[in-house]
Length: 392
Ligand code: KIV
Ligand code: ZN
Image (cartoon, rainbow, N blue to C red; front, top):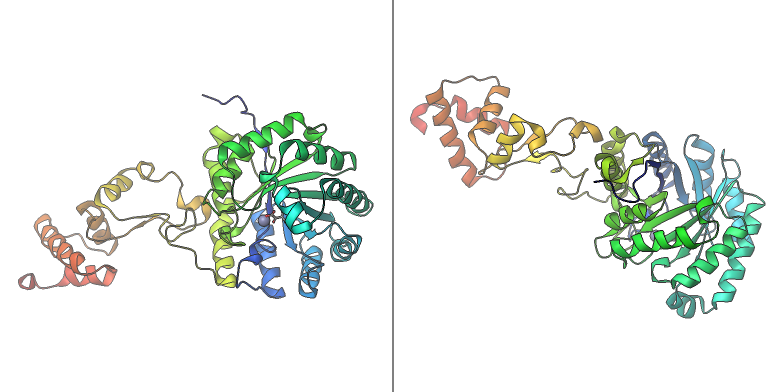
């Protein structure tokens, strides 16, 4: 049954691998590596690449400038505090891009305003309005983020959002900065603000979730259900602390469950595996084998019942085809739980067609070996096939 909010709409992907992703402890990409990743993100078809934080250091400035000049299809943006000097620096870095875009941010939760900014709600509103107006005189697209939005009082959020909308903002991002929210809460927050903030339906609302409780992807998808039109994420989910929502998981979930989300996107999904491998290699961040979509085991089957099912009809145990995300084929891993069907399949792949009694003998020998050895290679099977019968 279609949900009440079901309608087909276009979701924009805002990739922040090179900014929030690079905030992962110990990660440090040089300019050449960042440019390589940006070009691959462009091939993947992300709508927006956040290339860095130009005022934070010279390296980021030149890297953002280089990416803004090199990338033509995706829009390029850079993070900026609300000060005029940060905005001017961002402008110098981004002015040569085909669609100069800035990402302003300020915290809005009480805990951040009181203890980090040591400021007041009134000051945060005033600084935000001034910064949006100033940035609008230069940039084609101005995004403003309410850092720690998910722990911010909704009435205050509504008030400040209306003020920055009046000042001319194009995109408002409502981050779950500390990965605290639940799917139900963030869905309700987006729904409430979209319905009740004056002008919210005329701008883009964006979601940006962190993974401290392992819920970043589920929360991003829930925000989309609540009305977010843009989703901010990183490749392989890299980022500060437990990381950000992972782009590949959101993209494939939206694709496979189009019936549920009704979301169109611009990504070329076949580029996903390649992009993940590139980011993993350059960042030194190893992708766990069981990571959804891009882990080495994402399309591997080991148990006999699953292998038999997949050999008969892949959709029995695969909801995603490996080809969809640029993986050549699924893997039937031979181990102690594997059954005769998968074993026979491997024997044929190796070019053998033994009679039934010989197949039984080799299968028995394979099971004995698999009980002692974890990784069974093609060479192991080959050795069993050509072994003298008396050896078993
Ligand atoms: O997590 C966050 O709040 C951020 C903002 C700077 C957008 O990364
Ligand atoms: Zn973040």
